[in-house]
Image 1 (cartoon, rainbow, N blue to C red):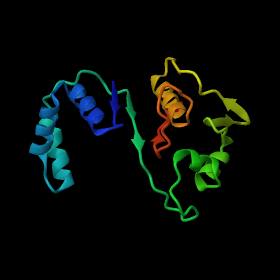
Image 2 (image 1 turned 135 degrees about the horizontal axis):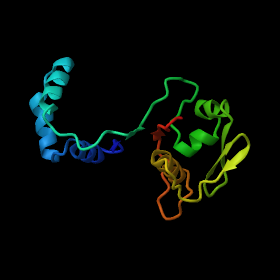
Image 3 (image 1 turned 30 degrees about the vertical axis):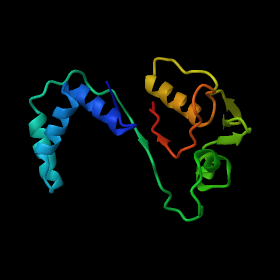
Length: 161
């Protein structure tokens, strides 16, 4: 089972499916467990959910996040493409790992160890999390004509081996 936290509605749907309850019931459990003390809230919530039947184990959690840079070397907020191709700390970070992004006017190309990574096809394999991340990255970097190019500052957590 996948817990998707890309948006509040997807998080609600994932958790409701996981606990086999409706969204309304999910909010009932959250609201009835509420306490200003975080530890008390956690205990209340845990105790109220103990009786629920879990349908299947969680295999993957999709994480998407907005972040801010704590370093002051970049004084402006770049869109994703600009942050990857301009002289920024993000670009330097990736270059330390032999990952280079190049703008070719139509989209942003990704190179690893000087080899172009093709992002113009849909990824389908046994590793659905990896495929989803690569397909999302391809959209964000302008490689999917049928979708709107998204240059937002989203981050992806890639599944490691």
